[in-house]
Image 1 (cartoon, helix red, strand yellow):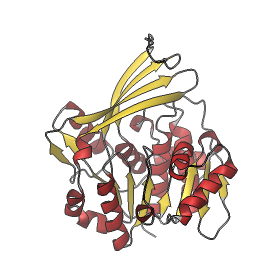
Image 2 (image 1 turned 45 degrees about the vertical axis):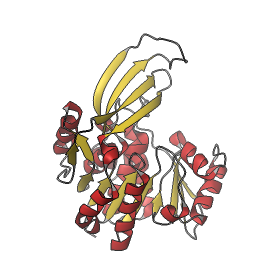
Image 3 (image 1 turned 90 degrees about the vertical axis):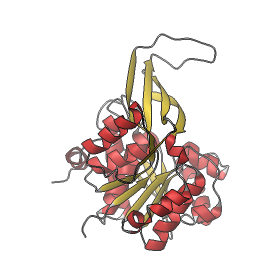
Length: 309
């Protein structure tokens, strides 16, 4: 089967990352060891991950007419992402403040979405031709819910596969979940969506099954260093282990790497299980590097980790 286009309906924000020996407590000022400004936003990160993994990717978003917006366009052009449907507006491009604990490789993030959050359901309708011609729609929750739902509905009506990464976590209605072929939450997102604790593989399966009963067709819970748990309709849950590609430097973009790699594999006609393995390998490489979009691996690196060829 030939490759089909992936449309990413999602956010772009500039990542402003601060590195320190540990995260500060409230009211505390710490001296940091590093600072970086780069491209980010879950939608953009996932688009870059998918494009570097070999997919044909088109982005639907909105930017401010400013330096952060220009950085977005330069990033997408460098990776061959079609940004012809990304509009500009008078609202400033958003930003994410990322605090990185160097000792543990963990992070805390505050996102202000800015311009991309002005994208409306009407804007999605205007881009409907691109969505209807896609094989896969990949979206997240850094846009208004009505905008995301309209994209999912258009894609579903056209027969495209729909992927929702429900991040940042928020409550979702059953009608929206019913439009999702592949729901990809992490542990905390699955817990928020279901009201259940998700601290073990068994609890992850319980939450995934609850989300399936509410309408999602296949739920894949990403479990960090344990890998990803796939719960498909009418099948036993399958745990795909994480790939060790080296020492962990930063986990900030791991979920986005997984989603982008997973979507890229699906766009090639691979099975869901093969796509989960491809996503895990993509994420496994990304955590060995600093940054979000800059950490996304190329296809040849992913295939080498998978032992392809």
